[in-house]
Image (tube, rainbow, N blue to C red; front, side, top):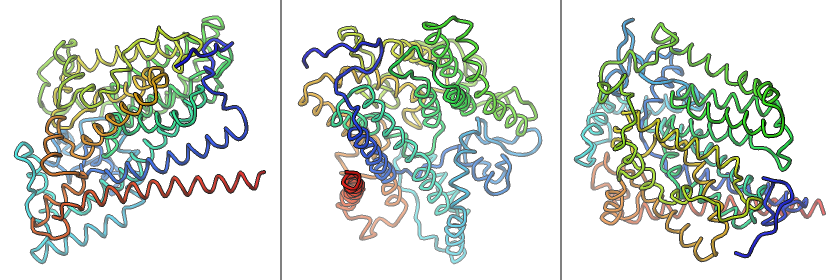
Length: 526
């Protein structure tokens, strides 16, 4: 790419293009809507039937308004009976509170699914056979048997769909659109910004983790949203509004309420707010402005303390303190010890959960951008320093968290909050690539990410199963494994390919429809 002209404001938008006209802004808004709805459709089409630990307190909140999960004892290893005789989940419940909202809306439909299952169970035929899953997943078979005995298989499957389709998928789609808008404001041309936004959502492990409810992705969006709110405008000397500082603090506090790992991004983003502002005003003035951020973080932190008091009778001790011993709790304090070099390495390269095995595209985010003029950076130096500090601190934190070793059972998730920052770090390399090279890298990244999201196993095993069984969808795979093997429609080899094509057509139709509406609006305005 030829040398880019310099921007006159340090850290302002690099003039790769000049999307300042009303027509450009209108086109960008339309493209954001197109990206949102198309991404929502594609994320939803790949939903997984996984029932995660966040589901159980959400069910309890909808059913009886408490965090007690007595009826689900034995369903998950993190559910335990406390000293008050009631069962609770041994992790933060902020994610469950968020998930309870769509579950409450669809509770009547889920009740009907459960009633149908129980009626068939009473007749001696649930319609499902054993779960013919892979030999290395015996716990899945045991879980399915327990669920089927209770007549809950349809309800839980429906709940998994609801929390993906109406929580995880739209949230991820929203951030795909937000990344596009950010790239446009930073001067990236429309076509390349569109491709990079799609690459962010579907070429990284975000695709894999969006398919099922999980607090790690909620923590990621809370962290990234807080950062985006504090990113200065073209005039970096101007203060971010108090409202944005307040909202950013609320999201950073929510990150802590979602998981204790959220303390790392909370401190990193607060330091970024104070130190970046102190470059233009006195430190004291910067500190006083930061109090809005602190005030915003208080309500979610208070909720964390309240929820721990409500469940365990003590607001300051987490669930991990009370729950019985499980894997790795003998290391350090309840599984948290000094950073382990082998775990640091595994978190990056382990085939079953490593960051760079699940998202090799993110390797570009570790490459410095010193070869590019400071004034032309899409991801400016100040924000790069934040990303560098946060990524390093989070890697060290997760290397000390021995529970990271249990990711073989879930796939990549602990390092998810650093994915958006690494992707932004990679954008300066991606926007300067020749078109053929970017297209090649994007195609490989899309395919690699889709294989993992569709098959949901370790990287080598996902490719092996794809080669053996052809295209897959996670929910369809489970449906095939739990229905009679001779079901004519489900066993048809072209069914997954047809469903994939249908989802792509639906996404394309939404894209075209929104584009036509924009053309009509532009014509009326003209």
